[in-house]
Image 1 (tube, rainbow over the protein chains, first blue to last red):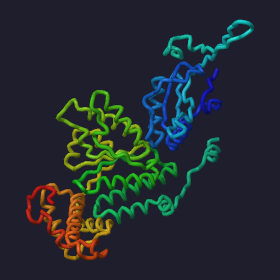
Image 2: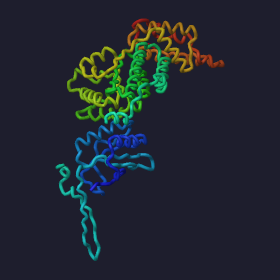
Image 3: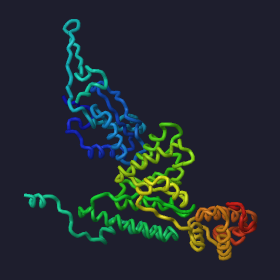
Image 4: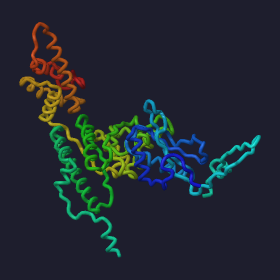
Length: 141
Length: 309
C-alpha cells in the first residue's frame, strides 16, 4: 500500500528534475530545506531522522540534490522526505513537505480492532514493516 | 522508420544569427563596462574576451546540438597585490551568468578560514557547506595557496583541497571555482597540487599597472568621490607614484587608494585650519599640491617604512 503523506503523494513519484524545481521554489522563498528519513511509515510518526543540518542560505538546488543523492545512497531503502521550513514571523513552521524516496515494497498497514467496555471499539493501525527492528524493516529488498 | 523519427524529433536550427545571439545575451555591455571601468589590464581583458567568445560559440553549438561536454570554466587569477583580481572575479560571475553557464550568478568569496576546520572531522562538513552555498554561482577562493601548508603534514588544508577537487570535477555544471593569489606562491601551490592545475582551464596573470595607469586610477577614484586634483597636485601625485613604486610593500591600486585616503585627510585638515572664511564647493573638492607633498614618502625617500604616511 502506497503511503500518501505530504504534498504530491497522490501523483506518480517526482523525477529528480521535478524535485529540484520544488526545492528551488523553497529556496527562492527563503525557506530552510531539510532532508529527513525514516523506516517507520506510521502516519503519526512526525519526527523523522534528519540527514545533516537544515540547509538555508543556499541559492541553488544543486547543493540539496547532492545531499539527497548522498542520503539515497545510504538510506535508499527507507522513506526520505524534503521539507521547507519558513522561519518568517507568524509562520515559523514547515510550509512544504513531500516524499522523495520510498522503499520498493510497501507492505501497508493492519487495522487492529479492540473490543472495549460496552460496544465500544478502539482502532489502531499497525505497519507490517514495523514488525521488524529498526534498520531491518526493508532491508531484504 | 528512423527517418520518420528524425523528423519527429525537434531538429536543431541550421543557422544562427551571431549578432542577434550576441546582442540577445547582453555580454557586449558587460565587456564594454569592463573596458571602461577597469583601467589597464590589457592581457586580462583580452583573455576575458576570448573566454566570452568561446562560451558564446559553445552556446551556439549547444543550440545546434553539436556540443558534447560542458566546458571547464574553473579559473586561476595570479598577480601582485592590488591588481584587481577580486574586482574581475566579481565581474566574471556576471559574464558567466549572462552567458548561461552559471545559473544564479552570485559570488561566494572565501579564504582558508572558511574552508578548513580546526579539529579532526571539522573540515569536510565546513568545506561542503561552503560548496553547497556556492552551487549555481562562483566560488572565489582568495589567497588559495594558504589552503596548502607543506610545513605541517597534519594540516587539514589537504582535506579541503581533496573535497574541492572532487566537486570541481564532478559538478562542473553547478559551480565555477576561481582561485586567486600572488603569482609566485600560487605557482608553488600548483606544483604541490598538480590536480588543481589540470582542473583549471584558464590561468590569467594580472600585470602590474604602469605609472600612467595608476594616475588614471587615482583620478577615477577621486572623481567617484567628487574630488579632483589641481594641476599642481596632479604633478605632485605623478612624482608620488614614481617614488612610492620603488618602496617596499607597494600594492598597486590598493596603495593608491590608501594614499588618496590620507591625502583627503590632509586636505580636510588644511581646510579646517582656517576657520574664518566662507567655502565654495570648489574649495572642498579640489586637492592642492601641498596635500600631496606633505606625504612622508617625499621626505623619507626610498626605503621609508612600508605604507608611509
